[in-house]
Structure formats: C-alpha cells, structure tokens
Image (tube, rainbow, N blue to C red):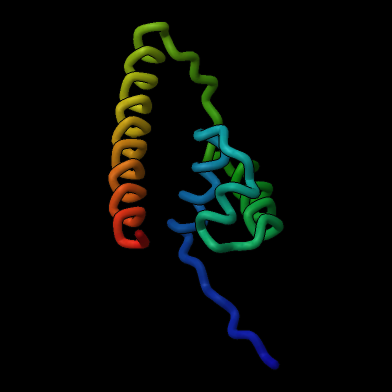
Length: 96
C-alpha cells in the first residue's frame, strides 16, 4: 500500500525544532506529541541549527522565576488531581 506523504510548512518545522532546542525536551517526546517520526525531527534540527534560525540561548532561571514556574505547575497538577478524583467517584457510583 502506498502511504501519502505529509507536507510540513517551514513554520511548523521551525516551531518543532524550537520546542526541542529551547524547551529542553527530548526529541522523542516532542515527535510523539506532534505525531511525526523522531528521525524526521532530528533531520530538521540538524538542518536549522546550522542556519541560525533556531538557537538555544542558555537560560538560567532566577530562584524567583523557578518558584513562580513551580507554583503554576503545582496548581495545574492539583486541578488535574481534583478532576480525576471526581471522575473516579462518578464512575465508581455508576458501576455499583
């Protein structure tokens, strides 16, 4: 069977590479989220890093920035936990 090839815009490619370079996230994770092959993302990264289109600026968080980021992340995790508790209670009632 012949598979159709997907075409990606330059903006999509640059943003995907930026997620890896600036976000410090693993290529495999970003590729999985974008539903592309990790090898394809590696190829884009090699292509664009040499051009200067995407650069990894060394970024060091101040303690205040880190605390702010962690508080936001904690709030999201708490909301997710509360939602899952409610969902589990709802489905537990339905199965009894």
